[in-house]
Length: 610
Image (cartoon, rainbow, N blue to C red):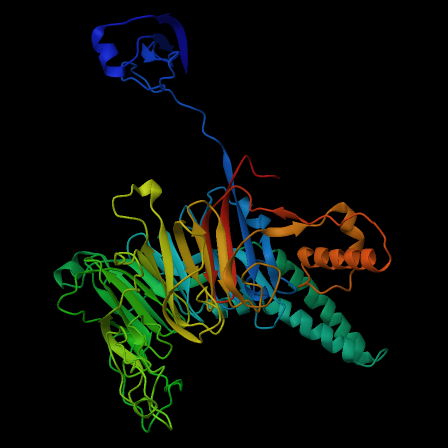
């Protein structure tokens, strides 16, 4: 702590030249008697500066914060479970019991995981019987990952993958079986209770079943209240480079620095810039040419399941540099190399590879030949070249089994966009983030835009539903904004802006967009907590109302009744008050999407409430 001892109107000439001030205060430290001169604000409005004449720093008290985690979406993937889908961002108090703080939340179809800042992993999920839930519980990792700190966790459709601080990529093959085993007492209790209720009342069988059900309920209660860690056996992904001298001597590229896990396949980037893929490969998404299918195939028909059981190193083009980052979708892979070039391979049936409009022969077919062709009708002939990097013949499968350079978005009335900052992928669509502001703008003023391509049947491309599939088109986020992070689920997205706002769009059948509805969200909407009705509107809420009836809907109904009564009966009643919008607390620092669930982490000033 510093204490002001006196103020001097002038000091030495050198001190004045350094700070540009003519008035200084002398301060003394409470520790070790250190002192020095510091400039003060003059009457002319000069800005207060710190001067190195003081031997010790002036420390301001740090603002205490705590984290709050909000989750919504599919009931089976909510921590602790939920009776129905959660349609609004809902605070989960369990997360606030961890003093280390949270780094990431991840979701699978009916399960999830959270990673704290100390590298510990916590998991939860649905049992084998619907309505039985396990966790959240700390994971007791055994096997190759024992004792290692975790830095990333992701899910495929049935497995959990983790990346350790040392660079080991781990797979938990028996993750679902461990969840089902832990939930077995709950499932057994439900089954016996159902049998006891179905048995004839008053019979010996009913009495015996009732006794067994009561005993099973006690065992289920003990299992539900148990906080014992869930034992999970981990295995290093076989065939991937591992950290150590042996890998370096064999030229295997060293440890894994980044991974991306999709529905059916995964990709891993090593510190030396190599890309390795494993998993489903029927569309060449692992960079390996799949076997040819017999007979002709339609444009959207599925191919027979082909799997790459051991990781393969993807062969990059000669002009490509070391791989920097990778992102995978349902059946396609995108990557960025050290030169800034972007490449993609895999399924291209929905033009999700960003290679241009590859659905046609490469010309504008708005005036294509029909019964009467354009030459007979007269007029201007239109055959403008469509921007694309590959083309498919009539019977060719729409896929690429080796990396192809992506086509950049079309720049309209502006210079070409710079290389993409990063990509995110959903099941069959791709999002790219491109800098929008001039390159001479400082980082503090930088803005960017999001372009989307691929499937748009669920409005996952964030613009409209006018096109079933689309080439690169801009997402309708606020102008002059800067997207800090972007996450994609199966068919929905969350964007975190630099301002701390969160926007959601896309498919919404289980409330994963967080607006209280289940319908499509074509245009990005701001994510908030559930609005609160005014006290005067409390009588308008009834138990019979569906869960998808939002406070805004109730307000609209009240306004309609008010207008009708005023026009028909001439009543001049009080105008209904709109609901109060409830913003997310503090500042959002992280967002997460997985399959049909969403989450975000907020840094909230003040201590956590007990």
